[in-house]
Image (cartoon, rainbow, N blue to C red; front, side):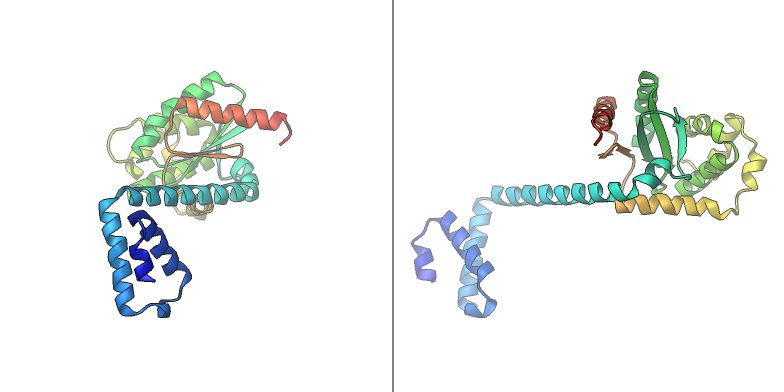
Length: 255
């Protein structure tokens, strides 16, 4: 077998050797043959490292496709909770024809920068329904701030967006103290929030958000659910507009 390989080009050798390894059990080769095959493959890859880049690219594309398929399947199952669940906070036109759901962390720099995009989108599209969901992933401070956010939803949901903007606009690490300061700035009774400190609803809400994110294959913030799409990261106003337009188009088509 190795004698035949020796007469092939290096590229053909790599393909043939790899094919033999994949289709043949390990016992089909002697130790000497295994060493020779390994040497051939290694020498080729050292001379042509671009092959590894191509392999990584193919692997990444397959992983992205698998994640997209997982997210699409999860979206169909979880849409009632994502869009109409009681633990999300509706902050724009509750009767809008398209719903955008944003998952965010109060200590996420990208989330803070993306807030301006969301505000501009809502301003330009009064028929858009927006749901916010806390997803604290950046430490204890994030959890504390998110818990206060849940309490705001329970005590004064009509002031949630004012609280959200105030806390997102603060410098430094968000935590319980910063969240209470933002609530006070938004005109919310801090004492009423403190009474919710031991409510099981705080962690139940955050646990639900984490489960939803996990089901959608997401491990970072911000990310958005718009129609049948999951938009990962702060990709800018134009991307959000396009996703909303596509969701509206599909809705009108009855899909």
